[in-house]
Amino acid sequence: MTPTTPDYWSKAKADLRKRDQTLKRIIDSYRGEIMTLRGDAFFTLARSITGQQISVKAADSVWKKLSDRVGKMTPDIIANTNAETLRACGLSERKVIYLHGVANHFLDNKKRIACWPAMPDEDIIAELTEIKGIGRWTAEMFLIFGLGRPDVFPLDDLGLLKGIYHHYGLGEKMPIKQIIAIGESWRPWRSLGTWYMWRALDPLPVIY
Image (tube, rainbow, N blue to C red):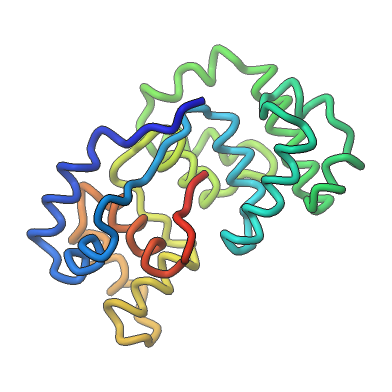
């Protein structure tokens, strides 16, 4: 699969550069860098599960081992890869269960999954979080990186919060109402604002 750029990226970047001086400075610091989309629903969800509650660097390491071991990341391949093999790649027992569950869900619900691109964000989140191992954060990563939705604001994401604390709060924690207000000021491009908070915090671009 060839990574692509979200179709909203240039417009969103130009808009937020005009409206938010903090984001303008960060965007200008990473000229030429863009968020990339995989365009593969299962790949994105599997990558998101792998990255749950660990650093970008650690997630990349586990993902590389997993990709080298199983090859192409498809529901049928993961569903038929035994737990011992997956654990040997650095996945926890719980994440192995989650990956198998998501793989089987994709194999059993192909028609329903084909409807996701046309559904509203919150409806997709509600449906995804019915799958064991997928919480709101994982569903939001799917919306951002799998479907290229422009206005996702993952409030449970530690990287986003740390970025906002650093760039808008002088390094101090901020009340949740204030964080939400910053996100509101980024509408309808909160996905882009979130990505730049990640980018300014981590030496590796975030991708799922």
